Length: 238
Ligand SMILES: Nc1ncnc2c1ncn2[C@@H]1O[C@H](COP(=O)(O)OP(=O)(O)OP(=O)(O)O)[C@@H](O)[C@H]1O
Ligand SMILES: [Mg+2]
Image 1 (cartoon, helix red, strand yellow):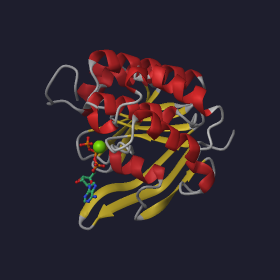
Image 2 (cartoon, helix red, strand yellow):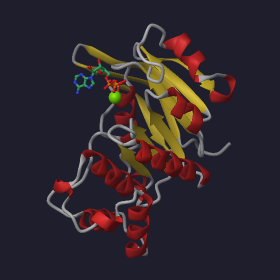
Image 3 (cartoon, helix red, strand yellow):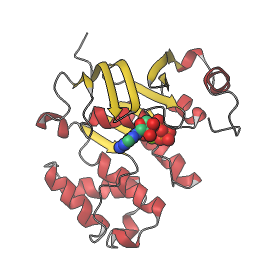
């Protein structure tokens, strides 16, 4: 078997007295699409931060494509979409994308920027300052920025937050495209139907540990909700 896209060995993370993760093991093969499910505070964002190298585990180890997450080689392979936008509000949309395209040495820069702006339907606002963007528009630009350098591994932390129904459909389409292109994708979401539609595998984090690692084909959103998230609120959400 090839080198895993991601290998997590016995990762624990504490914030002072708060336990965020305990002895998490996870292996994700290239081209897998895995949904990471769990209640608020289960440790999903912490896990993604550790995978991307933003946070250090208190103990245990993480490897991306066989090397340390912070290795330079991984910077080009990785993209993160989260609540942190990583955009400059005093620059226009196109200036932001040019900045990142140069940083990642994207080839055929102008065409690539045009393509991602079209992907997220923001071309008409490309010369506007990000400071003037609505939340959903900023999220769309974050998505464009993340896809710009054709990353091999996508880490998506509740990427649908702030998007309208149309933009949610657009992002689902883009993620299906990324999947077909053979990217490895990890997604956290509270929307079990979207998780089911997109990913073939899911893990459930509960009380800082992975308590389930299963195939979407073997289950349904209702079954997952009943088994792991019963007693919670709405139809669609966890
Ligand atoms: N910087 C921090 N300082 C202190 N505690 C933190 C920090 N970041 C996370 N935690 C704690 O770690 C635990 C896991 O938080 P995390 O943000 O990973 O949860 P989550 O599964 O992403 O939740 P949500 O669904 O609300 O996004 C929580 O108890 C949280 O309070
Ligand atoms: Mg979170």
